[in-house]
Structure formats: structure tokens, C-alpha cells
Length: 95
Image (cartoon, rainbow, N blue to C red; front, side):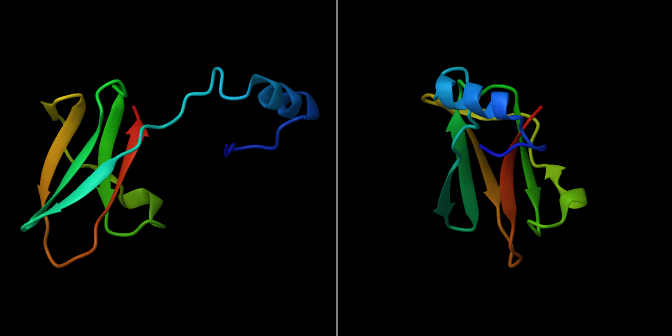
């Protein structure tokens, strides 16, 4: 796990003792290449996440929402995004 601060010894012991119980893990996004596009999908049980895109991973200020509504295919949210010649990065961020 990655935290935004140093944990106390008691917090480290509690996290170790809890194991996976109570942890809120980010959903896994699947990316599939299509002719002229990419299809992004993640589980529907991961509601409350925003799909964002950026042209550089290190540029925190330039992440923007890719779509505000998503198709549902089987048990996944799905978005098909046209691609151009520039690199794009995608992430799911808890709303």
C-alpha cells in the first residue's frame, strides 16, 4: 500500500494484522486496442470512479475527465476512445 504520510508503529501493526480485510483496492482497468481506438473497461462493482486521461503521467495538473457516462457490457463499465498519434495515459480516480 502507498500512503500520503508516514504511519505510526501502531498503524503498521494494525495494517499487517488486518491483512486484506477492510482494504479498499482500486479496480483494475482493462485496455484493448481496436482499429483507430482503445476500449477501456473496469468492473461495475467499482462505482464512484472517474475515468481520466492525460498526455503525460508526471503532469498532475493536466488530468481531465474522459467521459461522464459509460456503457455497461456484461459486468463492466466500458468506454471506447478514438486515438490519434499522441500518447495518452488513463487512470481511474475515486470521485
